[in-house]
Image (tube, one colour):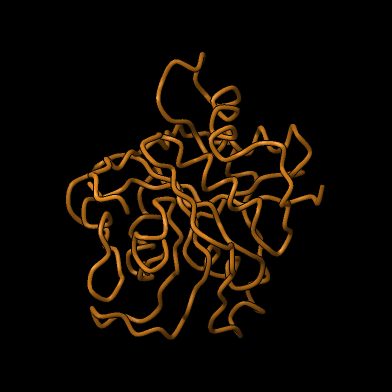
Length: 231
């Protein structure tokens, strides 16, 4: 649960759905690994955090913010985040639209159909994901959401532990190879949520490399990017 600026309690809602597709392996992210190894940190600036409110529309919000963000920035889309979520339901793996949530694949299928991307790609390991963030831009990250991820700790870290609460989509908007984490490990990603500016530090938190690697070890995690086209 979270408390809004007006003081009322708002329920956190999860809406990322997932269905495995073996064809994803044919479209891996291919960053220039040798170049990425020479870079220690990079932070992208996607602007103010969005707030999905009580809607299970995290996929729409994360994908819309990805499209809005640099390095290629489409900032005059004819659809808002919630509308992108509803469009994704028309393109996802399940028939009809009378259900809550959708897939990241559904969102990017819609964006491809609308001419915003030419191809969407997937990351399968932490080094590839890290290299992409350091070199190219943010990633839409879809994972199981654990209870210890819901509220950042005093150091503004979320942790992959606790009860499984559902599927959630958010963004990885930066990375620092040399950041010293409170648990003694080194290296962390900066993530951007869609629960408003009051969550974390202006909607942002840290995920250690250890925890991201743990998430990538699950068979239902997606790290999605695309070849974006300026419209």
